[in-house]
Length: 635
Image 1 (cartoon, one colour):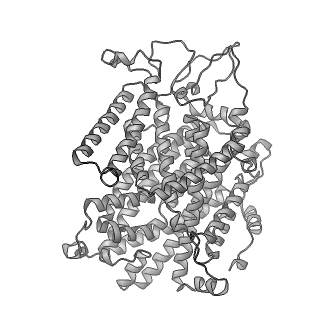
Image 2 (tube, helix red, strand yellow; image 1 turned 30 degrees about the vertical axis):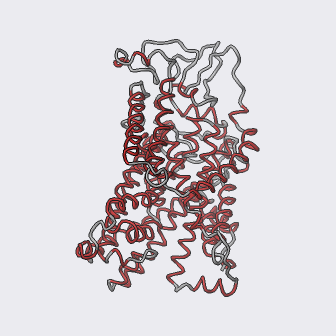
Image 3 (tube, helix red, strand yellow; image 1 turned 135 degrees about the vertical axis):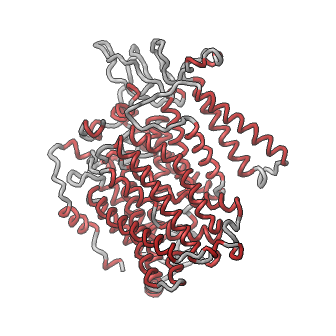
């Protein structure tokens, strides 16, 4: 089957002919991305990343084995939990309109090493996610043709029984990844056009499922005779939430594409909110009609929707559902392959990864080397590996990235800004951000104290009551409070997850420890809230900081601790590989480390210039990476 596929080189040449982008005359633009994505483009990218294989596979599996008809509540709670993380991404995506997503957000708030590790984990997330979706796509398409592809491969190529490897080489999955990579390398407009097409078909099929499903609905399927609405109780709903949470992880593709947005300050938050609302509505409505059409305990977890229509006598509708599932999986695959090379591009542009991946094709204005190289790697994994044992990597890497982004929001809000005066002739020049230590990000050194409250200082109205906190250097109390909050969140998660099963605490000890850690967690939030924050009226900002980011951190930690220890072992091995790359290559080629250090007599500010992240990113990244921008798009 692989011989029938066109070569990637011929597909790339064909797409370049179809792509009407004119060659750029400015050679400096060879390392920048083109701002060509509208709010609709970003929204459909987010919808494509979330409403995919999970809708057709995850819904039936969770309903049958975990939550029953209450799966719709699981999706609702998971949507609210995802909203906490999405708000953090929305604020950063609006303030830092550069490619890189969680990697860049961590870079500008916590430093280079933490950013590299997050970027390294996001790479793994996209690679395994793309291979897993391709495997699901291949299996679903093969089942439509009575597994003729699998039978042909096992007969003429062979099969094996090797741990971590699939039972047979999946050439169909590898071929769809290579084909999708070729189209993605043709440019953002070509990728966006394909995503629009598949997303429109997928949304129409979902609308068809909901309408026909409600027509065929039988309320008796939720009755006590069939097990009731929540046969597994509250614990089943929460267990389903842990599974359904991962159906909403695709919205970060919007933040990863913010450098190519025409108006990122407006379109990124709007696209994240709209796409998350559409995905939540689709999952809740589809799970509702699915469990109303047929009894939940009789669902086929592999193809629940198509099988439900088959059993109700609507075989033709089952074919429409199958076609919609193929289109939905295509959108997820395109979203993953669209984001993957852009994360690599951001890391390479900062010098932390091999420089070949920092080059952008002058015509298509996409990182072609990263697209093709990592497309080949993803295809290789899809060809050979049995990804079921590795899928939990997706959960751990994603939750860790969410945790760091939420923490970065808190760091940003209490970050001190520079004095409003412009540098004079004796000034050392533009202020730059240095990533020396965690506490440096919350302190301002060498400035004169003013009467106006600065971010990180105690609010004037609370000084009569909390005057003992005002005696420390600016930002020191915030640093300690944030550290205590993170430690207490980890402790709460350990008590909730391991208190009864592993730690074998007595009931009174369990309650006492949970109460004490919760009090410490709340006190740290109160101390953080007592200090002045940055406020930008011209940008989207999360309400109720630090409460919302802290709740996101706590939820993510609890979900990470529920993963198996083997997942943590594999994850640790991947982290060690990343550290080897960083200390072997990244730390020596880092643009941050290669910049000239400030003179001994210069004033040392560890700040965001004028409280703006845009100038910081410009200072950290090479000048050629900063794309030419229309001022109107940034306002």
